[in-house]
Image 1 (cartoon, rainbow, N blue to C red):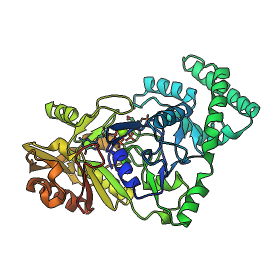
Image 2: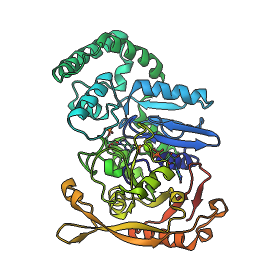
Image 3: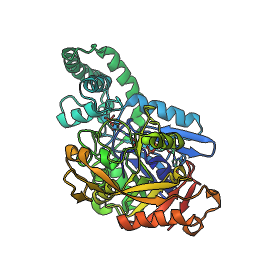
Image 4: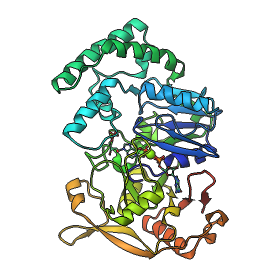
Length: 416
Ligand code: GDP
Ligand code: IMO
Ligand code: MG
């Protein structure tokens, strides 16, 4: 519902219990999803957050961009921890992140400054749209000679571009060798996931679609150009999987009880003072993928309302409320005020307009520190916290179903 890192990994792991298929539909290893299970913590970048369920089918669908090295490393780590990834399916139509994408991402960052994760995401999706220099998982099914020829042809084109931009030429023969080796390891997982997933739905199986990133990082609807290069809003779940819109019957929005973002771009409720630092430290707000400190600020309901509109959100999971425990006062942004004094509750499409917006806050008396573990229902929560939750629900007109107070699956209260 925001700019990523809302704890989608935790919520997907929890919801996976009731589903048969867990599917990643967008992004690549720019994502960092943390899942805690007892003593074990996984920080996943590419595979769906269903790894603690070996019997369920995990799918990397066509909307994802796959770095083969990350995929193989992640599979090895998960299997080494004792969880079989035998039931993994990788779409034939997913695009691959190649070494030149990573080099080009670095070069573009030096000239632009979006603050990307430098995982090659933008250049890989650019090639998907450009077509002639793209490599797909389907190419890994080619015979060795054909695959090698394709990699060498594209690699030479990319070397010309990299050279012209002042970068260091890549060893294309080595990349071809690595791709041939990766193809052997990944081939058993590659399948037509459109038929796999629609077939599963036809049999009445339950499919959970996991978005990476956040609505405000959506390439069409986010704070462009400070966004990622895919559509993680609910519509992206359809194009990213081949599941039709009519098959989606519930949209769960994951929102942090405050706001964070990594990378550059406007952020109206950002706290650049000691309070922002306090939230960062208490919430452990450092990037899962890059380790960068996350920018922190108050909950922005203009942002969440906008995200809910784009996604058709039916219910919310509100996360990290524990981080706000014991605060004397807390604030929630309910509208923006433009320079001319006019108020709006609509999120502006133009980031220059957004950068000028001043948040209009409603202040709340904070709730005291209390023992979350003893709370089993909303009525067990401090009354100030109950009021806070009711206010958020009323403003958004969306029920909060889950309240999260810690990284573990058990540290969740089903309040509805
Ligand atoms: P994702 O990218 O949306 O999956 O989220 P990240 O994994 O990048 O960041 C969420 C972080 O918050 C992780 O370190 C989680 O373990 C942690 N976390 C999840 N839920 C809670 C919660 O309710 N309270 C606290 N304190 N931490 C949480
Ligand atoms: P999860 O799934 C937070 C941000 C980057 C940068 C912008 C573009 O863990 O929520 P990219 O490398 O995608 O070209 O970077 O998007 N970004 C994320 N921020 N969480 C993520 O994923 C992100 N994935 C990308 O920081 O601002
Ligand atoms: Mg993350």
